[in-house]
Image 1 (cartoon, rainbow, N blue to C red):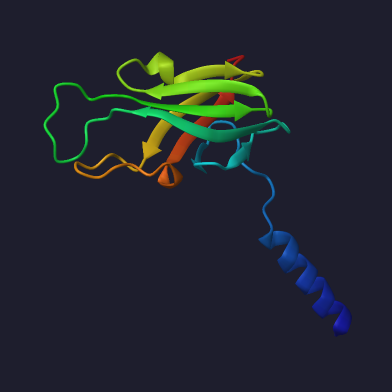
Image 2 (cartoon, one colour):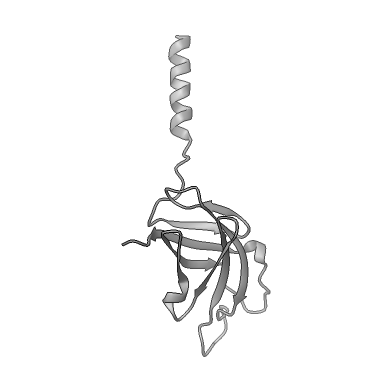
Length: 131
């Protein structure tokens, strides 16, 4: 009985822990200041900064949709700048055999409210740069 209980407990613990991390093609939400490990690699990418956010705030009529530019530090030293906006090529970068794409940046600006960097979450996607 005790042996069965220990085996069942070990199985529950093993099934309950997911250490696989993001897979290629997955959208990954990265809160400001945190780090994600690249799929199938030990290389890390840290959401380091929001250097610009000129996106048109909700509740405002704008002539231009604006842009948001974020900075990631890859592998502890390589700086990668990604920009959401009219040019989708600016939202992508090739880094260490991967294409990293900035998919979204939340929260979206609101009229009359200053953004707080600590509240930003960047959604990125890793794909193979070889495809």
